[in-house]
Length: 203
Ligand SMILES: [Fe+2]
Ligand SMILES: [Fe+2]
Image 1: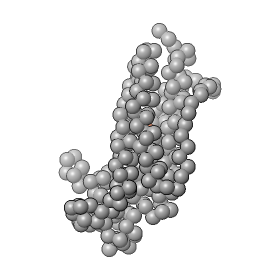
Image 2: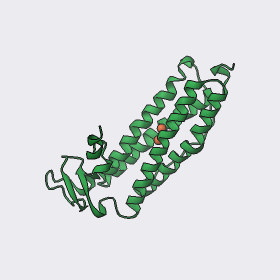
Image 3: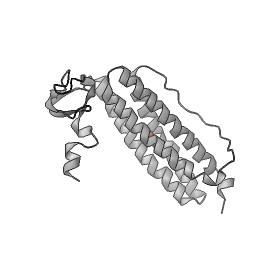
């Protein structure tokens, strides 16, 4: 059986760690950009996802513990999404997340399995599934922004203010929260809130 030291998986883990650290930081930069444009809801979308990437980074890094104090050399391509355009940032994020799921982590997981590291393979394959959810979430929000539907819906739905928790049932979020006076950018569809009504009811 091959040791991790002589494996391709060792390099794949470091590539994944580097990729997750970059995604974490890219999303925090995008979050700041969204906040500057009064789109607090997108600040939280990027920040929420960034925290998950930070966790993925830690999972991959922990698999490299036996190399403590050493260096591993890698060559890899990483994206540069340095834009002020929120729609573009959402679309690029969706694209990268899809690539992680569809090809990168799937192939890294398959290689780890082939080389005899089932625990590492499981990390790659399970995180690949999470990246698919990330991709779909970014894609959905890109479409909402593109269609001017971030704060509008054809039928009445519930929006929740991320600042004070006020719930507004209408075909659109109010321009200003009637309770805390924060701007419309603070409103998120209640169904998308991590502690949304339906999710609490199904606990
Ligand atoms: Fe990730
Ligand atoms: Fe992700």
